[in-house]
Amino acid sequence: MPFLGKDWRSPGWSWTKTDHGWKRIVFFGHELEDNNKDIDLKELCSDNNENLFVGEVCELANTKRKKELYNNNTKSQFVFRDKWIYVQKGSTKERHGYCTLGEALNRLDFSSAIQDLRRFNYVAKLFQLIARSQLTSLSGAAQKNYFNILEKIVRKVLEDNYNPRLVKELLQDLSSTLHSLTIHFGRCVLVGNVNIWLCRLETIVKWQQELNNMQIPKQLYTGMSFNDLPLHMQNKILCKLSDACDIINLGQATPTLHILSENRTLWKKLCQFHFSDKPFCRNLGLTRSDNVDWKLMYFTLQKHYPMKEQYGDTLHFCKHCSILFWKDFGHPCTANDPDSCLMPISPQHFIDLFKF
Image 1 (cartoon, rainbow, N blue to C red):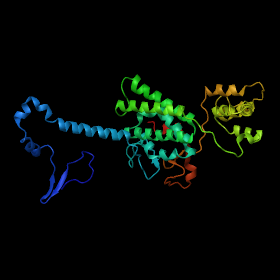
Image 2 (cartoon, rainbow, N blue to C red; image 1 turned 45 degrees about the vertical axis):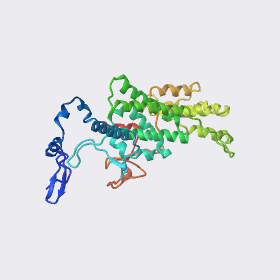
Image 3 (cartoon, rainbow, N blue to C red; image 1 turned 60 degrees about the horizontal axis):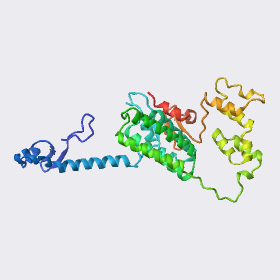
Image 4 (cartoon, rainbow, N blue to C red; image 1 turned 90 degrees about the horizontal axis):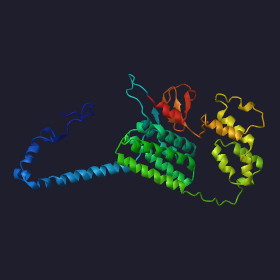
């Protein structure tokens, strides 16, 4: 009786059912010998024997080429019913193996996450960190999924004109990494054919050109605009911005906004928000001197300390279940108080979870 289940030792034999019972299919045996009897020995020994198998070889090569082209160009995503993943770093009696970064990339449905503006910046920053240091740790399927999602990120920016600066930085870091891995090393250290990665480099260059040529259309709106608001309200809106580049770009719109963007109180609050918890910066809020150039102070501290990251929504990690998930989707938690076990995960913390 044939073994019908999956055997980890070998793929098993192929069987077919006949009137006399089960019969094993033999690909290289008596059937091959019987087929060889029809081949003329003189034909094999002649000078034209190179054309004997050329048809079969060309057919196999053509089939392989079509398969590789399909695998490279397919846009199908991994579809999982559960939008969470168990993060395991070692083997136990109950679970064997460990969870990889590529597996998490496939399971956590980042394709749908980029459609949510609360999560877009989070996913883009995470992909930027992967492009800088973790690209070689992804499997072939995870790398394909990575570039499929990246294409959706670029398309969303081109369609909605949302945060092109962050995506430009992501593509620049990815291009630099691929150049160093495929060209400067002299050999490809990534999974897959080097020609596929060179094609992906060309695609990245094309995306960069599209983003550089992107023009934001003028909004045709006859109602109240930002300039119609009182100055104190405009100043409050500027104080809510946590990115210095956004403040500087907004200050270039009108002369009034330029004056508001140069306000020292604004830059002092920005320094306190990003660097007040850093060493040697705990007394920033106590400084009362009017001679401090807070804008210069901000860019000086930025060179030495990382800025505080702020996202509308992030992945969460359950310390009780060791499960990583999006909070909106939830996870099967067995804790008495699930909310007390949740911990928001920054993009860098996400990368660190899968370092072994």
